[in-house]
Image (cartoon, rainbow, N blue to C red):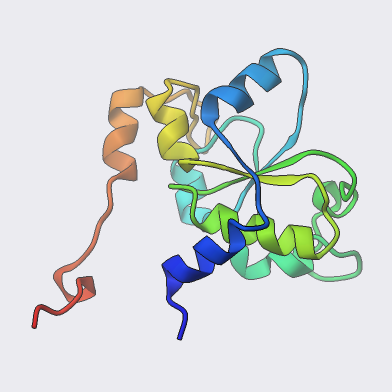
Amino acid sequence: MAGYDDLILDALTRVKEIMPWDLSRSMQSGNRPLLLDVREPAEYAMLRIPGSLNVPRGVLEQSCEWDYDETQPSLASRRDQDIVVICRSGKRSVLAADMLLRMGFEKAVSLKTGVRGWNDFEQPLEDAEGNLLDPDHVDDLLAPRLREDQRRPRI
């Protein structure tokens, strides 16, 4: 039986990852890929890379196809264009990029280290109102919030 990390390792055999500094440099040179944030809406509302589009993983497949309630035209029309998939740490984005590749989005890549790495590289993040966030404050927002019952039982 494959676990979560096994699924990610398998997807990484097909998915290219880029580092935050590579994305930043590319954007500064005028390349404007679609920044596709696959985190949940509450995570996205808390902080995001300016200009990114939020499509949660749970509705990704419908969002990138025409004629569905979840269709996102700005995604469905970009099969032949650069797409950088983003999540908090770079794991969900690998799985989402793998799905996009399977659906014919040939230029989909994953942002390695996600918004955490983007923040560590001191790149801009904003809140739902478009206000830029202090990178030190962002660390608190991105910290894992595991409850005790979510931890692996000790045997």
